[in-house]
Image (cartoon, rainbow, N blue to C red; front, side, top):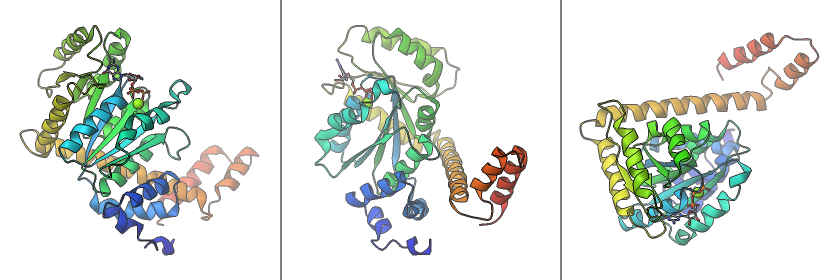
Length: 323
Ligand SMILES: Nc1nc2c(ncn2[C@@H]2O[C@H](COP(=O)(O)OP(=O)(O)OP(=O)(O)O)[C@@H](O)[C@H]2O)c(=O)[nH]1
Ligand SMILES: [Mg+2]
């Protein structure tokens, strides 16, 4: 791997300089898990943690992409550079999401201050959330001020991705009692900001009061969660949303709960790096012929020549050895 330490095209340097083409190339390398990607990810580590990572989570069709698009307009007005990671749910029902996101966010394609990338949920070695985390890191390293991650609040990995974010915005649409139930069951707990989008539709106000009612039942002493209403299609309420995000970001970087938040953020990063490093190591072990041949072991297990426990112990032993 020595020849990839310093990529001949200086990809790492160009990424750190914030070049858009280098950003696109780097993400592709990371998605394809190339040897160059491993070097890149190692190279960017000292440059991470500057971006504000904002997660947008909510039920399918709540208007997340439209709202992200509207928020980008406002963030650009505030001269923030933006990266967006849109995570496509694996469900065939929402299979059109990537195309939809591209279309909805395409008005920004000529603005170098906005970089949108969709991640397909399927086919990533090691799972979706480590992959999303790596792509967020690459955008962070490229100097994006704000990285927005859009996920459908459905599965575990989406919740995990939301947890990676510094600020979590949970979006729902009005009048969908079931949605509110789903939010209550799963993602209300993780919300820093709640948004009822499609405020132009009937029942929006009722949904806002329902959510406020639920929040009032939470334990005393928990951080206050603003409940906003927006109409993403005409931008109404988006300035207030941008303000809420920035206020919350201010809390992260200073103020009364600042140090705690920062510690929690650091802990999340450590967990993420650990999970990433472990996954990479296992992948390398499987890829390389490293004394323990995984294929051989599997064949031996299949033939009944080797117990499962013994095979697992051999692999673990190999992991414990220095590289
Ligand atoms: N009436 C109304 N429609 C909206 C609003 N925001 C979004 N929509 C519409 O709702 C539909 C879904 O919007 P998206 O932005 O794709 O929703 P999403 O949550 O990103 O959807 P998935 O990514 O598929 O989960 C589109 O037809 C939007 O035009 C709004 O504020 N009011
Ligand atoms: Mg979407």
